[in-house]
Amino acid sequence: MPLVEVRVTELDRACLPAAGAVFDRLLALDPAQVVVDLSRCRHIDAAAIGLLLEVHRRLARTAGVLTIRNPNPRIRRILHTARLDQVLPIVTDPPSSAPGTPATGQEPASAQPALVAHGRASVATSQ
Image (cartoon, rainbow, N blue to C red; front, side):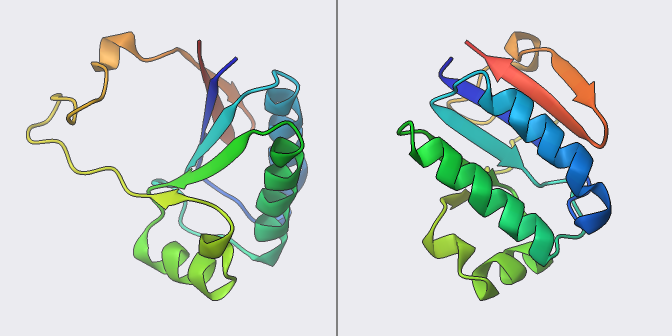
């Protein structure tokens, strides 16, 4: 499986067991790439950074890549301070030109994979 996407809305010590379980399930799919979308996440703490580093290490063992997408400016500063931006790719999607119009290079929303909700995270798989 080449790509697994996860949209995270909360990532701190309180939800770490649930988030860890989601990551365990998605890593069992043996993806080549995992994208963690933080666009709706408002807080991240040291325990969450540790979890992201562990997911990165596990993926690296199989030549997989973990990418962080769309962190808000506050979370981007936290990731920079923790030097996570030197270990993981952190990307920001350009805004689309009009509501409902996909950004260049993206598939239309109707072609996006279905989301499967698990606790406070949702998992999307693409094949």
